[in-house]
Length: 307
Image (cartoon, rainbow, N blue to C red; front, side, top):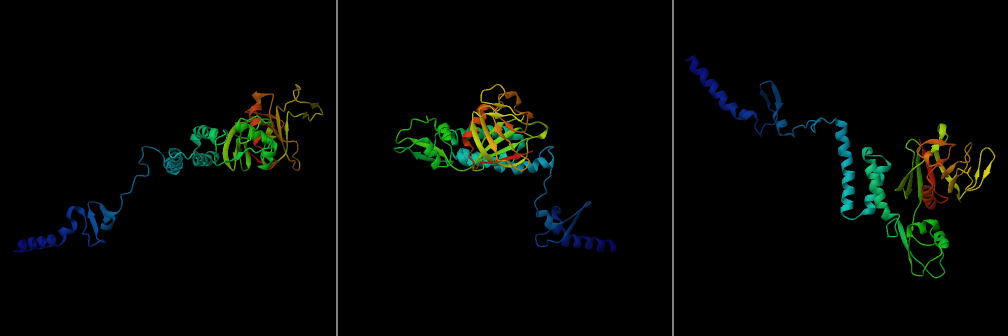
């Protein structure tokens, strides 16, 4: 009789609790039941939660790489979207931010190449762009007066429009870049980056001062000279084309600061010194490169030199 009663009790208990543990899943109505399944303890409401992903699910990549991937992908995705939509200006600006701030350092070279390609049209061609205004030549116009009107250099107008400075025809359309230029110099990278309205225009290789002689800081433009004469620290005066003249074809001088005077950016007759620390403190460039930035630089151009 006792055995029968025990069997009935077990059957009754099974009848009461079996629905709660069917397939190890608790009833929907009771969300605070604790299920014991072998050595695992879990609340029934946790079974509905999203399963936790392995932090290192993507192969054997460390978590830092996964975070970097999530951060960089949207930036490149938006650039790709802009390019597909024909929005070259927006793509250039997005890439400019990525490049200047080195957000994806392993892709700097590819980004630089794409930026240069975009700026062949946006900056260095006569085609219209948001960086510029289109001016129609009027009777009596001369290049210097047009440049003065737009606070730019006539050499730059000539460069991007492929025009002769002495031959303007009434009705000609001239692309004139607008806004402020800025120069960023990195001593550690031996680079000079030209910006327009804080967006990338072009990057150049440079030479800097030996023994850390090139100063860091923000500088203003004092003067600009074509075919400059070099006044040597030793007292010699060497005109342009003199074998002792080391300044090349252009000079962009910095305004003096306390204990800092005589510094500037110039060309060089020593192209092998580019990418090296060998000058007396000035920034050296290949002549064709310094001629190009010379056309962009105005007296309100800021020059920022960083380590």
